[in-house]
Length: 266
Ligand SMILES: Cc1cc2nc3c(=O)[nH]c(=O)nc-3n(C[C@H](O)[C@H](O)[C@H](O)COP(=O)(O)OP(=O)(O)OC[C@H]3O[C@@H](n4cnc5c(N)ncnc54)[C@H](O)[C@@H]3O)c2cc1C
Ligand code: FES
View 1 (tube, rainbow, N blue to C red):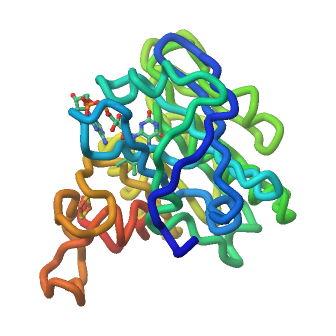
View 2: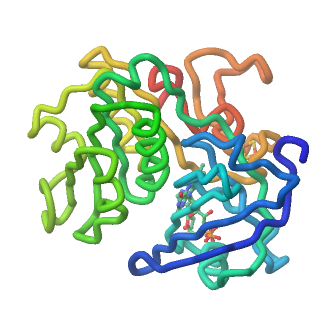
């Protein structure tokens, strides 16, 4: 398959993890080596069967199974599209473009003290990164996971790869507050930060990384339309001019969703 063509994939399993949260494994056809090309932090565009919803829904890759050419996504029902996905049983088909965007970059710092931060539905892509780092020999991974309440999405799975800390907005588990409160409370130090979550959380992490002089890679999950860089429906402001349009913009779907924290204005 040529890179990033739409293909029909097979849903091999789908389970409900919590109220309105689902985990789905998707297997790609033999002529589409999607899992072999995918890296943590990239996303896939999933199409609805209902033709009234033409735009695909972007969902982050949560886990990659290269030998079986499968990807896992974990998503929350936000509207009609994700509601339709939640009803797909094993052996359903789904049209997908994958993998899309630029994922997390692993460099020399990634194998020192690595701090992964996920907030809400930004937690799933961090699981695949934790696994990839551990599989590649990283021995110091700390994960700070921020939740609204005590529904601790994927926390158990993170524990296989990282030392896990939790914040909840309602104080029902871990530290009452946000992920930055946890980092300060436990005095967590890092050589590199990777994060995905709501914009206010990413702004807090950018400020913390700058204050401490460490690199941070942030994944933005803003609204998208085409998902392939054509419509400019997902731009964020950037420090440098974009060679493509000559303005201070970056397309989240094509240039991101992962950016160096100092590359974008948030
Ligand atoms: C790069 C990227 C990765 C994503 N990864 C995940 C993921 O791993 N798991 C997951 O659950 N969701 C993820 N999302 C969000 C997901 O794409 C939306 O929730 C989904 O498209 C909603 O489709 P829908 O048809 O169900 O709802 P719609 O009817 O399209 O929207 C329902 C409601 O959700 C809001 N909404 C739609 N898209 C977004 C968005 N991107 N951010 C915030 N609010 C939104 C709308 O404003 C509306 O209020 C990701 C988004 C992006 C851009
Ligand atoms: S969603 Fe169309 S350019 Fe990004």
